[in-house]
Image (cartoon, rainbow, N blue to C red; front, top):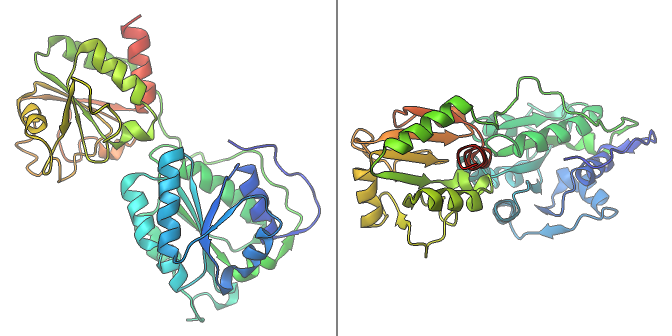
Amino acid sequence: MLKNETSSTAAKTGSELLIDALNNQQVEMIFGYPGGAVLPLYDAFYDSPIPHILARHEQGAIHAAEGYAKVTGKPGVVVVTSGPGATNVLTGIADAMSDSIPLVVFTGQVHTPGIGKDAFQEADMIGLTIPITKYNYQVRDVCDLPRIVNEAFHIANTGRKGPVVIDIPKDIGISQTDTVHPDTIDLPGYQPTYLPNPLQVDKLMHALEKANKPLILAGAGVNHSRATAELLEFAERYEIPVVNTLLGLGSFPTTHELFLGMGGMHGSYAANMALTDCDLLINFGSRFDDRLASAPKEFAKHAVIAHIDIDPAEIGKIIPTQIPIVADINETLQHILKIHFA
């Protein structure tokens, strides 16, 4: 959510515009490590109210930002220099993509005229990060910078969350413009689905009424959607046992009588037997990865599978799903608790 946008027409550098954009996004801290290509940005940090956390290595900066994002639910912000500084954050970016962690990563780049000419410490961060980001940008016009920052935060922190990279050539950081910060975001091709289809929810509830051995599989999506309280209420009302995935740990109290432990390769006997014997498996935000479902054809083979996930690409990707619900988990559980328990 944006604060009141800066509307001053006084000329500012790209670095100053970036600081204004981060303030508008209510960024609480920046993690980073300086270098030549981002010195204009670091000069602007002197006048910024946003604290900067100086790491000892770029990899430390991005993993710290991941931790911040996991705890707060807000995008972690990272600033690193070009070339080796930028490539040092690739592991963290890939990890954030895999674990659906919102990050906005600003990488320095050589001057615009030097791009593609093997300039000193040049790395093709757009090409390198295409498969491990939700989206990436290279700023070629300083006037585009405020819009790009707004879009990046929106993309990183909506739908299935993940990392966005903004590659900033050094000359963009020192170029001046009187561009006004936009107060709207126009991304017509990006419209995540949050509300569940009521007909699909009805199918789930009818299946639950018929089930003798229902089971909840709680994945990372429960934590990402901040739905732990709603999951607890749902499980208690129907007295449904709960199994966690590794990344779903923390979404359900481990001391609760309905908790069976973690499922999969390193999971508990009780959890894995429940997955084997259940006749209805309600999957909240798990991607059915190989550590959980190493033999997909044998996984919960007696069960009707209901899969609730904000990312439609995950539903049916590994395990055939009879009741797909593309929606935010929190919204889905609130709908169930409001409509079906009214």
